[in-house]
Length: 103
Image (cartoon, rainbow, N blue to C red):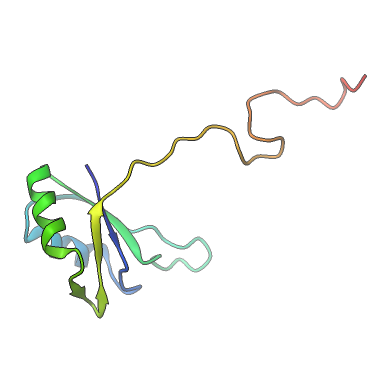
């Protein structure tokens, strides 16, 4: 399971987040997505811990807590939608495009 952590300071580091969550159990992974344009933290992240019990304790203790001047939002991360298709130049499906077969 993964924990979603939102409303984070843009100055937060992975080490900062690791330190806060380590108070509730062993942290196995911290991920802070970066803005593609600026390279800055986007204000949210994900934390994974060794067991679900520790994750529940961390969520209960930290959701709504003020940290680095912000009220954190902490809850179970929702699985990402694995939608196929979309995007791409020709609608995203896996058909081959050939301009020579026009007629």
